[in-house]
Image 1 (tube, rainbow, N blue to C red):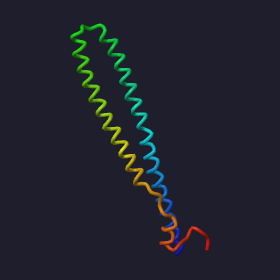
Image 2 (image 1 turned 135 degrees about the horizontal axis):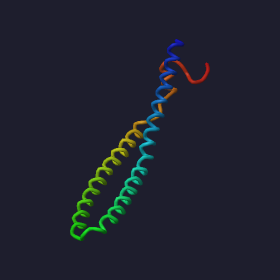
Image 3 (image 1 turned 90 degrees about the horizontal axis):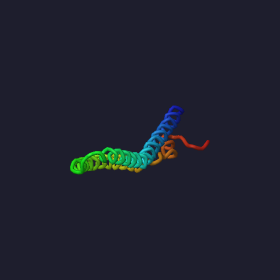
Image 4 (image 1 turned 90 degrees about the vertical axis):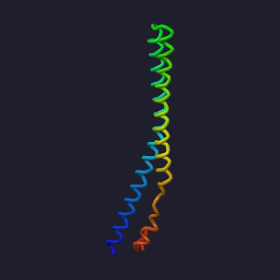
Length: 118
């Protein structure tokens, strides 16, 4: 009987630990979204500034061809980043939805114990 109570308590502690871990992962995923967006914007700004300096020394025809190619590259990079951010966001939301706190009273009562002293 004591073993059942100890195992029930251990099971409840493990369920709470799993719940808290899922909450932490979900929160970390949601915190990463703005950081990823800021990183993408800063990379874009640095790349554009570097390209402006480099492209000033080239002829107009070459400039426009390279600019079109770089715009395509940037679009594909931003599309890949958007897909990744959406995947992280959906994973975080799934973890958030899936994480419901365990029922400690119900678990212990099923095993014959109680949270309060008898």
